[in-house]
Amino acid sequence: MCGIIGYVGPRQSQDILLAGLARLEYRGYDSAGIAVIDGDGGLGMRKRAGKLSVLRDDLASTPLADGTTGIGHTRWATHGGPTDANAHPHLADDDKLAVIHNGIIENFAELKSELMGEGVTFRSETDTEVAAAMIGREYARTGDLVSAFRAVVSRLDGAYTLLAMHKDHPGLVVGARRNSPLVIGLGEGENFLGSDVAAFVEHTRKALAIGQDEIVAITPGGVEVTDFSGAPVEVEAFEVTWDASAAEKGGWSSFMAKEVSEEPEAVANTLRGRIHEGRVEIPELDGMDEFLADIDRILVIACGTAAYAGMVGKYALETWTRVPVDVELAHEFRYRDPVLSPRTLVVSISQSGETMDTLMAVKYARARGAKTLSICNTQGATIPRESDAIVYTHAGPEVAVASTKAFVAQITALYLLALHVGRVRGAVDPVAAVEAVTELEAVPGKIARVLETEQTRIEQLAHWMADTRSVLFLGRNVGYPIALEGALKLKELAYIHAEGFAAGELKHGPIALIEPGQPVFVVVPSPRGSGEMHKKVVSNIEEIRARGARVIAIAEEGDVAVLPAADEVLRIPLAAPMFEPLLAVVPLHIFAMGLAEAKGLDVDQPRNLAKSVTVE
Ligand code: M6R
Image (cartoon, rainbow, N blue to C red; front, side):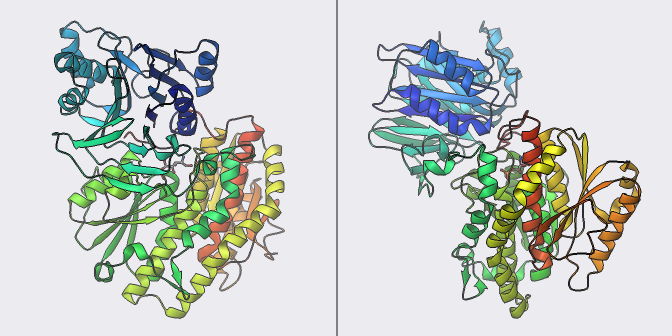
């Protein structure tokens, strides 16, 4: 939540800041602003409520004076509504200092009254302006921006990334982070700071990850990182594995459309390098065999779509490792008194690697002696850095707020993990493991087929259903989390009531919701094998049909039993039951996107949301 960029170097910074903010806008888009130290040593600032385009238009009609040092911010409101006044940057020290912030300063109210007692007045309702005033007050004492930061951060509770620059120090941007993301981009004679590498990937792919509780000062010629006490620290360098074009729409109508089309590639890239002669070996887990052989419990923690991936993963983990698995929402987990032991493997799942609830849960689990493994899509993010082991998904940058390609990549990573751990423990039958690998390798081609054969029809269906007020989703076994995912996508993109249920739960209450014309998507398991679940789900369909539901079934090719029962049948290719979720979710992603588009909504930036939820 909130995107941050800082630049120092020889180039005019305004275009660099605006381009960086455009790439960061997915992190928050209710207001935006920039500040620039101009060539005459003045500090110019402009901020506007609304999307970045509002700021851009404003600057185009009334430009700021040029300057080569600048900071920029795109906001997701926490303290104070999305207004011009609450947008960042915030100024202090007689408007000579500009500050931007991501996170929440929990003790801002008491700090604010302290400052008001000293006669400080405020122009916004934000916690950020309080931090700005404090940095300004310290700076006025010492004339040293880094030591002003050091004095202030020790007084702030909560989570924050703060960036500041002072008009008396052109060529210097100072930042600090606690539980909120910040990375450095290393250029030639110029340097960058960003909430994530998207801020500067257009200019450099060389990056440094700043650790927890560290302060960074960038100048055109160098980077200095210290801890909060002022001691120098080693920083971890990494090379960004994707280029700027990967984070561009490239001719698609939306990032979401592009990212759904990339689902096959996301699975293929997550598999790459992890299958050797038909068996799964995850190189990142080398050296962990002894521990993995001894675990007695796996606990999966995540939020939103990532938690649904975890729920799918539970079936595979239990089947192939024979270790009991629990899946828990990260924000619920740490506010009870969970039972953890050194034999518990805590698996966190996060596309962004910055979700605050998940991060806090990981820290909590680790502090209580559990080993933590992060499944993450974003290099250098905080959650993997705070974990004992990392399995990256390689879905590429996901920009649309709705998680799509990351979801299938997360399930793929969980299946790989299950097969890896199952092999290490001798729990998975080697023949079954080879069959599973063959199935996994076939998934990208099968997803591509769903996109090829069903996309247009699903989009038409979505168009016809543009006035629908409520949609229900049913699934059973591995299809149940897919029903939940289908409902979440519809809520967040199309703003309509949508609920996912376990099909078996229907008669325990939800069937009362069925009235004539109620659309219900049903994820139908394969009739092959014992077909027992298939029969039960078809019976469920008949029960709701008898009460007037309009049924849209997602069923495998050749399943004829479903035809008389359903109004519409969307087809997925044949796959072993464990792999069906990776295919069945694709029509649901397309449908949610199609319905939102049919309603004229912004599918990339749905209202009230942000891509990474970096506040609790
Ligand atoms: O970055 P994360 O995977 O940790 O994000 C978790 C959820 O916030 C995220 O999946 C959210 O539910 C999506 N907007 C759903 O499409």
